[in-house]
Each structure stands twice: as C-alpha cells, then as structure tokens.
Image (cartoon, helix red, strand yellow):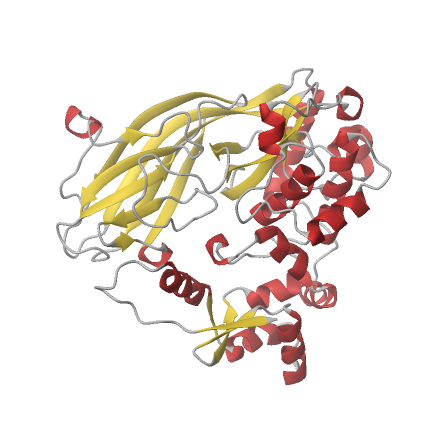
Length: 452
C-alpha cells in the first residue's frame, strides 16, 4: 500500500509546524523513483515486469508514497523486497550463491561470548572494556555564522547493573580547529551531563557556527559492559503483585507506540492461549515474532503513527520496531516491560540497536533482545553443547552493548526547544539552533571503538 501527501514549502516567518516537518522527513525517506527501484531489482530478476512492480507496490512489499502527484519509493524499498518476500529472497540467494545460513561477524563474536556467559555461574559475566570516541559533525553553513548550535551526544548510563566503571575522558567542540575547546576549565562550564533520572543519557554542548566551516562535537569515555544470563526463568517466576506501582506503570499503555489495539490483543491472546506461566507466555510471543517478522531496513520512527501496528500490517521491522511489538503484547498480557536501547558494540559490526527488559516477579528485570531472537547458530553441535543458547536472548544479553536509554520518547536534559529528529529513540544525537531542529541530512556521526 502507499499513501499520498504533498510537500509544503517551508515558511521562514510562519513558525514551526509539525505537519510541515513531518512531510519533510517523509520526503527524505521516500526519495527513490520507480526506475531506480526497478534497476536494483533487475540485478537479481533481469526480466522483472511492470505488473510485478505494481503488485509489490500495492501489497506494500515495495513501500511507496504518492508525493506531489508522484509515486516515490522508500530509499531501501528495493533491498527490503529481497528480505521480506521469501520467493525474492530465494532468487537473490541463488544468484549470489548464498547458503541458507552462515554466521556473520556479530554472530561469530556472540558464539564465543555466549559460551563464556553460559559457562559462568554469575548473572553478570564476561566483561568487555571499551574506550569510545564519538563525533557529530554539522555541515558547513547549516546554521548562519555566529548562531549558537546546541548538541546532545549519547553517553553511557551509570545506573545499569551490567554497565560499570563509566569514565569520562574529554569532550570538545570546534570548527576546523577554530575556537577549539577541551576539558580545560574554560570548557568544563560549557558541558552538561543529563540527570541520572533522565531516561535518555546525554552529554550536552554548545558551539557558535563559523561561516564555511563544519562544526564538530566530540566526546571520549570508557566503560565496561557485562553479559547477563538468567537461567531457568520458567521455574523461578512467581505471581505478580498487581497492586504495586511497578506493575501498574509497566503494564499500562504508552502514547503512540504501546497501544492495546484489537489486533494486538487478538494476536497476544491467540499465542498465549492455555499458557499461564508469564515466562512461557513471553516465550510464545518472542518465538512468533522471531519466526514470522523478518528484519528489514526501517524508515525513520518519527514518520510512523503506531510502530507495532505498522509491523503487523507490513510483516517486517527492524530491532526497535520488533521490540515495541513484543513489549506491547507483553504489557497487554500483564508482563511488565520497558524499552532499552543504545548500541551493539560487536568488533567490526557496531551499530545503533534497540532491545528491552521484562520484569518477572521473583527474579526482577531481565534483558530481552527480540531482534537477535532465536539465533541461527543455536542448532546442531552448538545447541547440544549450549542448550540455553536457543532462548538466550529472552532473559540474557551479550557483553557487546552500550546502554543509553531506559525508555523511549522522553524529554532530554536540558530540554530541546524543537521536535527531536529521533522522536522515539535517542542514539545518533540531536542538534538544533534558535530557528529550528537540524535533521539528519544536515549532519553526520561516527564512532571509534578501542577494545581495551
């Protein structure tokens, strides 16, 4: 399916409009022409027909929108077709000679890491210490000369049991080596760490723009990340205290993305029919999503009205989208849950990543990574040697993480004046000036990791 909208011209003097902002964000994501999509598909299906394109577009397998009377496709619509359509995926695999499953870089790292964690008798084990340099670069002249740029960078949380010894090293902002600041006394007054109570952990800085020069914000820090595993959850869980504040808060609906729609209720009820154990209920829903919702590149979360419903309607999603679907179903079934996110830090494969935590009475909060799901390597000799590896990510998590967020869509510290680029997550960072938010095309980010 596709939707129609019109991109309105920006109005310098008309004030901020979310509708105009939303339309701009959608136009950034939906920027591929039909010919560009067809060109990618022809790499694997040389004789693709116009009817096939039409059918895939109508079904939503090729995601498109009508913008200013033109049908434009999501920038990753063509690659996604070969992820979400089984027959197209089989064609692509045959052309590229891909076997059914081969562990990739993060899988290989996790296979080794999980063996360490599962061999330990401790809940938290296999620590990995990392030194990080994170950089956000605002394009030259994205902001007029002399105007102050406000920047929020992701920073590791210090209130997470499996994330220890967070050490700030330095931070700075500069424009092509002009007006350079460092962790000297001069700069220390210009940085602000978010309050521990803030659900998004940030380091905040400001820097005036210099004409013709990019503005660079950077931070360096170290921290230690532990793996976690909670065995035998099925037999450890106890009945919930449904009168507790924790239970009421984390089994309730949340604006926009945790809503108990009829479709969510029906699916959750059908998957858990006859199951009373909360862990086994969660496992039934976790397994269904793992088996039925393939990963696909996602449009920006701020452009989606209800992410779990999008996943159900389109039958695909990325890490955060699948996490929100699981959390919504669990909360509806009376299993407390909350969103958690930051980065996966696997050597050679770091990336933005989302997961969550579920609360089981008698155990406490445990991690759940719906995107990692049931690993492809949890079979054969590996599964025989490590039987807990199949459902490891329902109650466990690897050591290669950086936790930044304990929820989604909350206020930053200090507050932003304009709508965030990431209205759900906070990972890449946020930037604004006195006239508005700076969206992703106007800046970039990078991370350097040293494994200590």
